[in-house]
Length: 80
Figure 1 (tube, rainbow, N blue to C red):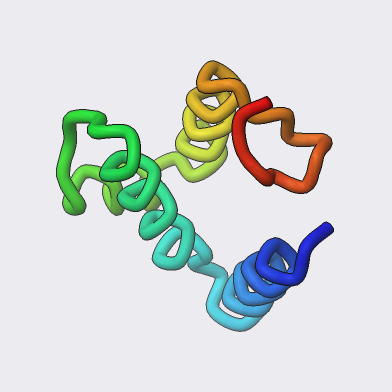
Figure 2 (figure 1 turned 60 degrees about the vertical axis):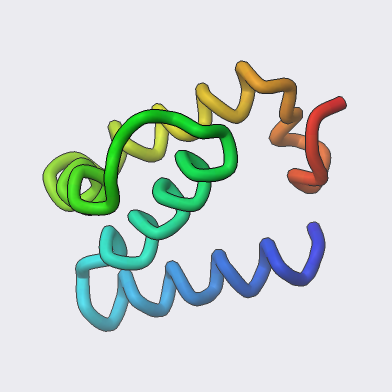
């Protein structure tokens, strides 16, 4: 894994264990993904989806990246 992935995972784990609300961190990645691929939506709905059902939101993002050609087993470097 690359350093950026490890840092992001570490921050997520730290927030999860210290506050119990990692959704406030992960919703920013949803916004970033949405803006990068010009997907309709807004920051408010990104945060609401993560706060209400984070596992569902993370699965949606995973499927979207997989659909766009990312191989999650290869360091998340981009489409193959």
